[in-house]
Image (cartoon, rainbow, N blue to C red; front, side, top):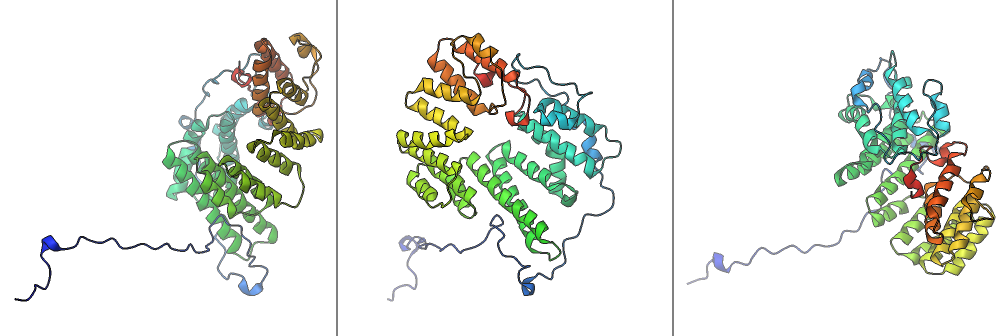
Length: 420
């Protein structure tokens, strides 16, 4: 009797998994790659497609942005509260919005921008969108991106649904809307923010390549926007903790500034050798290169070499190098020297340990009191004196007496910034 044509079911071999083979990645170009192919350089390669249609001249209905219920008015109290040494903000009735922004008074600027926005008799894109951008940007500077995301949601939703022509919205505002999506929310929201940046980059790249009606200056604007979005995508990936992904992303971008960012990322993931190789490949000498070289030396434990590089840069007036030099001094136990460096940086040098001597010094035009410098100096006060509280109070009063400016990162300084 012949064998059956097929074995019994109990003797059948189980389903075998197909062996997978690695697929070689093709050298493709993404929307964030630099637009380096110039169709205008060769007349035969100029696209014959029609340029994208311009925004319609019909009135745009922006009345939905004038609903007071969409906004947080008044703003919630600052938490932590402003240090009492800082004077109250100027009056909104006697101060213009540009003046508030130039002086770094971001909280009253946010209130005045909203007040002006809601008082628009006939809202037009040229009046509404700049005010909305100022409102959202100042909220971010006040460390309230959650409020900014909530207030921007109606406009973002209309753009997503296609019920509003994106060409009528200023480019900077569109980028800010996408950035807000990635700054708040869960992991999914942050990933959607990255994809939104890629979507904008694809649009910018298409506009830089598709039409022959753009002159060279206009094309360069769109090329710059592609570069900017590439850097923003890298920053978003770093914020998500995707450091290696951000590094691979930066490899597709060109320019000396990109090499500096790649070197910092390599240091952060522990690839000190790779960071050193990137910096040594640069031909031009610069202060930024020397500072990054010093960071690499610190990562390798070569504090002496790092100190020599940073001291040379600080002697030439590089504030970033001086700040890092103080940090290296802290690492190596030279706390008094580190404190002196930061006090010189902020024009706080004194010849006595009495706090009133510091307070009586006149404040000159010096380095802006960035949060990192303030934090480092207050930390050093805590390490080198039992009167750290007095010194930090004096420092707060000294900062409050200085001329306001946007480079200070906002004039509403909280006590926590001085570790009080």
